[in-house]
Image (tube, rainbow, N blue to C red; front, side, top):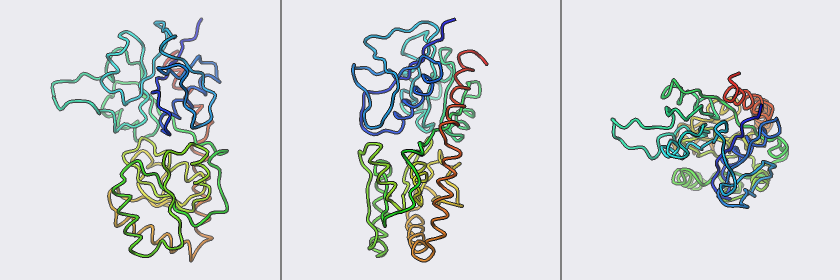
Length: 319
């Protein structure tokens, strides 16, 4: 019996985007474990180059589907998912549940959505928060939680840190600017270097995180909060927003979750942590180690592999 092919649609966009990296990681794991799986791009020979991968690739110009194959759509396609390839088996890879209704109208009579369309076989999410969201809105939909894996070889724990505070600038930049300027005028940053992470490839991000003692998380809303998890794995003290999707690992015993938008609380917490770093470096090192161990244990490649293969075996074979 032939095995259905699985095609994960991915935009031809080579700027660092965690969601694209996870599409490639799914395809790699499926391909390595007996599923004919491909990342499907539009233009040949496009491929993402900002991280290392060995995912098989396919292109719209030279691929064809059978009625047994599956086409996997990112949640960002929204209502368009139902309009592409009528009759094709579809799975929605929903990496951020808070984008589920982007592109929808406020017309209460219009309930057209791919999540209840007969072509949609299932949805796959990356956090328990997203799983709860979809299960509440679409209880009839088969939904699977496949946690993201953080590679410990790339985002490995670093014992030696510099007096460096790093942060991503893509989400909620106005709040980032408020926090940094509050701290600047509080005169608590003099001996720390600020390192924004913008348009860096995976290796460069990992190098910055290995050097950084502190990582500030401004991501909201998040389907998972990959940057914070990678920072913890690298041994950073992480302060900020879990974005909802990172709630399960943004634990107060080794990190400092801040209520979204509470910039004064955010700044106060950073100032307090900087004081603890100076007065109790051993305790802070213990927290860094505990955070890294938690991520490596709960978000490993083996965890991701087990959940991904289990989901696809049930989707394809019903077992």
